[in-house]
Length: 397
Length: 217
Image (cartoon, rainbow over all chains, first blue to last red; front, side, top):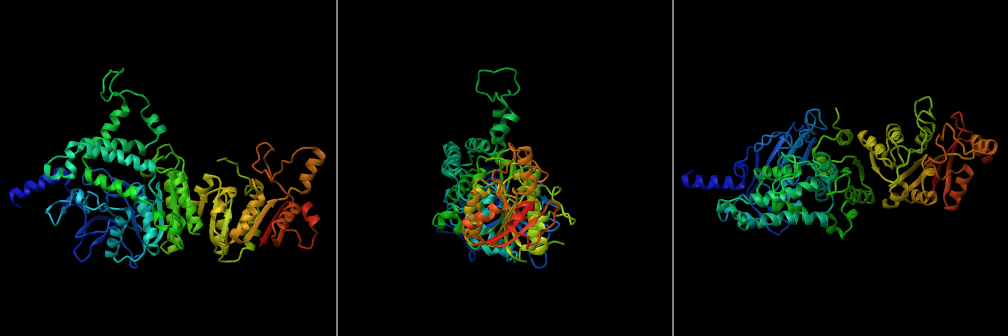
């Protein structure tokens, strides 16, 4: 690498927030010109690559694979420490030896979604035609595009049918999309804390986040990589807003109340005087260290566009017609981003399609983020459902 | 959503030698092996589990209490939270071979509509219920002038979820009214024994503590 090239590379790594975009620590599947990703936007993405991790062993007849789909700002480090933050995998409480998603029994695949910033092709990746990062020249990515790419990765492993597809929030949208796009390729599906479409309120929150990013002068219409800047302030505000939607009023009050941060009385200033302000600022600041601002725009857009029934004359039940997949839906009572009613609508559609469905609402005050937390009732449901599905699939030992 | 206490007798109140409730045993005997079954008001999944084990059915459940649902799912059963009065409408016609309503009809708001829905969704409906015409209940009203509180129906009138009691005769009449055919009927006496088919309705109505009916359209 020449000095100039090294400088450009360093700048890009700096601008993207982490070097994983360009030089992933994980395995990568490369898809060349002969294997383009057909996007819903009507364009092909090619070449492209998928960064992924696997846990456990694929059995001889390749029938024990579980695909784990990550959420908006997640990545493929679901059960191993993140190379960026050093923190344990985001679902290491659920995935691992002897855990509900038991890596002693199942082969777990988790890939970074298209449009992401942890090694899979996204807006910070280099566009071959220009030699510069895509920025906003990357077509808008949809949930179906993400799933199409995952299918190409699963095919690489020679896996015909996934034993299960599991995911929460945006990951849950991917699970649902899998069951609709590839109904014969999914034996069991676990969509958690999700919906069959993004609600108007959810689109509204995403738009606030995007406007915060775009209003940051350092965003430069998405070309900040070349400018050597990063719209960290805008992205932090986006994260702060979004973070509130992941919690609940009750949990916030329980945790922070009106407590003051490092002071005895009100200071009559605009510092982070309340603990909740300090907490949110911290959430915003740590987020920008690990996430690319343009990826945030693409991820939120993908969720906004999601509406399964739209392709089926507005009737969700038609999307699941003839489905042989065993479903288990989970919602959390205090989740106001994807309230229980969203899951119930899917359950009713699955009933109408005479599909096999279980549905658990977990009582908790911890809001949408509950799917990432230790919730014993949630774990028991996942464990029971997956074990029963394994028996039905002939996987139980 | 209203939270009812469990309308069904517990497994201790009506236990047979095999450790299963007598009415569950009878239902299991009535279900053809390998059929598709929906258990409405499936509680903690005891009947579904019995049906899967003994009859290898493709079983689904609907249960009002979230605790019951979560227990079922943790046991590996396909169960959703739902209400017999409200949620049966989402199921298509003829989607099950049997729809079972075990010890639940007396807790529904609209027994007639629910019964009609069972027969729309299922080719057959199996309904079990406590017989309010049983001699002990009649005695309680007649001799003591009090609403009956029995081992089988332990709640007082003001906190019972059972709002639509009926007798065996009442049930037969309702079945006739909605145009259903009674295919099989069983009654269980106070000692948990099946009563002979040859006995007249009046006898059943007096000494049957519980009844199990198989209906078809």
